[in-house]
Image 1 (cartoon, helix red, strand yellow):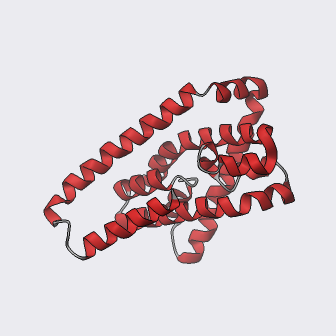
Image 2 (image 1 turned 120 degrees about the horizontal axis):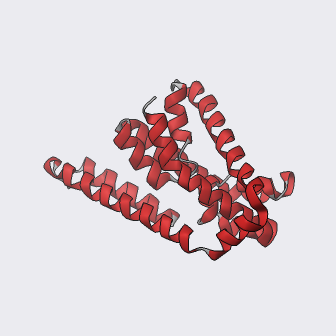
Image 3 (image 1 turned 45 degrees about the vertical axis):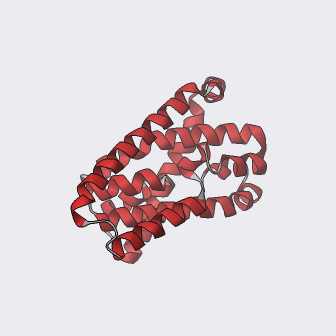
Length: 199
């Protein structure tokens, strides 16, 4: 998956730089991105809705399981604001980038549409880097800080891409918590990005 994302971005940059995509076709490319984004959101919704494991876990653990994604969201936004301050971003703009919670494909497109292309590119790269780092550091976090903390590095990606890494590091019980956390954070991404982009 990582190679596919990287090669797609490189191909897009080269196609744009070499003039292989005529400027007049950019609105059509934008419309295609909107359709693809809608299909992606529909797919995520169907996946969450059809997952019996997620619903059973929610019933068994009850409302207290929601503290995990709340803590991850708060930490992600606070960290983004602090990092943004270091590179000269306003708190609201930095928070928009952090509100992707690792979901680079959605947050990059949304931020580019709602704010501007520069910030959208930053959101894409920052959240892609978060996912890649999560694949590397999740086992270390699990060993150092425990199973619940293993849900934090991956953010929204703990319901899909980084879930196997969490499961290997903390076992099935921790993986269920990570899945629920990732699902909740995935649902929050479009809401928080939209709200924060308007500040």
